Each structure stands twice: as structure tokens, then as C-alpha cells.
Image 1 (cartoon, rainbow, N blue to C red):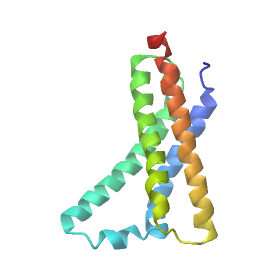
Image 2: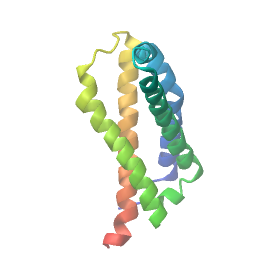
Image 3: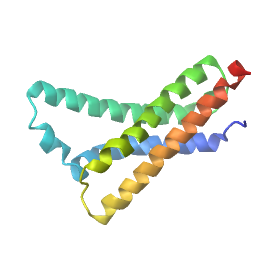
Image 4: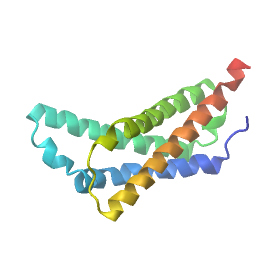
Length: 144
């Protein structure tokens, strides 16, 4: 199994930062999320907003890690195993959730949202593949 070229990891980092930047727009314009959140009790509103910020923060942070430490993410160290395992679990979980639950909901029918949805799903799958590959690659010396 070969190490991934750094440019693939960097492309993933740019994509993750993009998802962090576009996420507030998607919540507002596609899902009308803030209207729904206003229906919750005040504490639950704050919890929902906090989790939304966590998602943005994680996506941005994972992207920044990929941009700054692409080589370190494939150096087969214990830290590389831990970080790539964490990020792989995050994106594999996101992809599983995306396909298991989201098709049940009605997304606005405008072409930009339809194609945007396909694009975002492709990005999520790309992230899951990159980090799962990195995680397995980093584990190889341990399983020998």
C-alpha cells in the first residue's frame, strides 16, 4: 500500500475548509434551519446552535490540519494513526448518516440545491475515502 500524494490530502483540506465556510449558507438557504430552531425551547436552541458551530469548527480544523500537516498525516506515527482515525470516523459517520437518514427529507427542488447536494455528497465520500485510506496506511506497521 502506497502513501497518498500530499496534493490529495491538501485537496481534501481545501474541501473541508470549503464545507465549513458553506455550511452556514446551506443551513440558512437550503434547510431554513434557523426558523426550525426558533421553535425549540431556549436551552435547546442554544444546544442546536452549539452543535452547528462544532460541525463548522471540526470541518475547518480538519481542513487546516490537512493543509499544514499533510506529510505528518501519513508518517505512520501513533499521532498520525490517532488523528487520521478520528477524522476517518467523523467522515465515514457523516456519509453513513447522509445516506441513511437524509433521503427521507424534502430538499428544495432548485437546480443549484440539487447539484450542490450531489457535489457535497461527493466531497463527503472523498473525505471519508482519503482519511480511511490514511488511517489504514498508518496502521500497517503495527499489523506488519
